[in-house]
Length: 236
Image (cartoon, rainbow, N blue to C red; front, side):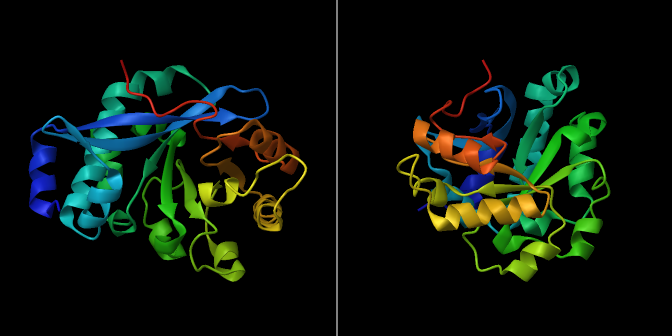
């Protein structure tokens, strides 16, 4: 089992790198953005995020990794973001890093503050901050906020209605329930209808089949990610 100190050392020793999961517009199959994913190669072997992310939750290393991700995005995709309209980059943000000024500082240092409107901060519903914490983001008016893992936590409809978000990411758990294009699970229909009624954009995660694409388009889902379109990619 890895330790916090091992992960911190790996970060300092440049063992981490980024891959990007493309986000596809279901309307015209155009790539409209991507989600940045931290990857760790340790002694020639890839360590699963499921192994190292839980270890650093609520530690200083969680913030260090988040700020490193932002710096790498600036280095790898800064010009791409500046030169393309209508695109975004999703960044997974631990709730403990919100409201402390570090995110804006990291974006400024990475040269991304001028494209802050193309940054999407992804926060899980289980850790979604209250309105006061969201307002504490100095560049909140420029960035988008996405609710990650939508529908998998214990939030109720009142909680959802109070979230100051722009986008919801419909978890793969629900997408997997779509096994044919003529049988739409009620939970999928209900979650998408609720999100659209709240004027939220929707990104479906983990799309792997043509029937899922067809159903999502019929339900009004705007964007999707998943192996049906592409696996996560490194910048070459």
